[in-house]
Length: 72
Image (cartoon, rainbow, N blue to C red; front, top):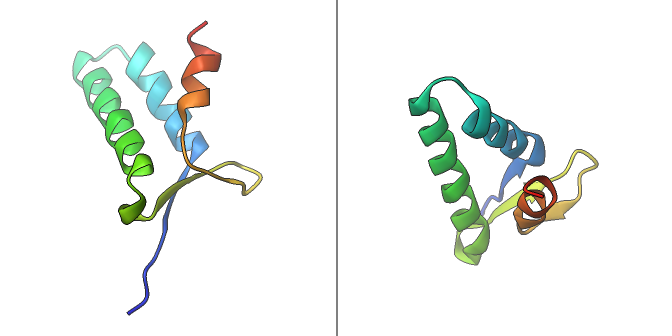
């Protein structure tokens, strides 16, 4: 049985961040924040075979650097 790896583009995470922070709907903000939290949990769990991917194709294990850069 083959195992597949799910790749989550960094641009998707960036979009969730923007919608979660600036969208006019509180519901959308909440859902985006929850989605980001879930993605971070998936990335940390090696058994799930989920990885982030940059636009250049580099596989990354976390999007934590994203928050550090944008929250300052």
